[in-house]
Amino acid sequence: MGLLLAGCCCERRVVLVVPPPAPYSRVVTSDFEGRPIAEYIAEGPVCETECGFRFRAVERRIFRPCVLEFRYPLGRPVTVAAPNLVATPSCKPCWLVALDARPVQDCGPAPSIIDKTTYY
Image (cartoon, rainbow, N blue to C red; front, side, top):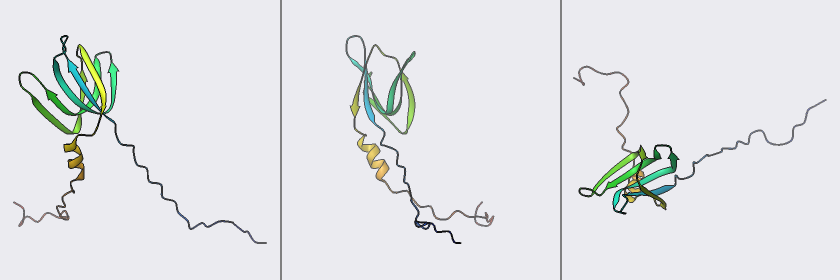
């Protein structure tokens, strides 16, 4: 008596899981008179906490005493407490898109044994 199995056992399925692109937001803080204090580009959700709003900033621009811009390619956790805060959807910053498109440099194979005559 034999056993018959239907189907092909050689077929393999590869499931590629790609995370959805992180949404970006522009967060603008201003004082009571409506003058801008700072502007952030947030990657991911902007969450309200008891201390203010918490998000991961990839860019920050401050307006006083002069305009200064800071960039955080890896993101920086930020908590913002301001009288007025407006968060609107935004695109990914151009400098971050260009940074993601750059090829990774190949430094060659790593030495397995350090030769003391080569490395001082």
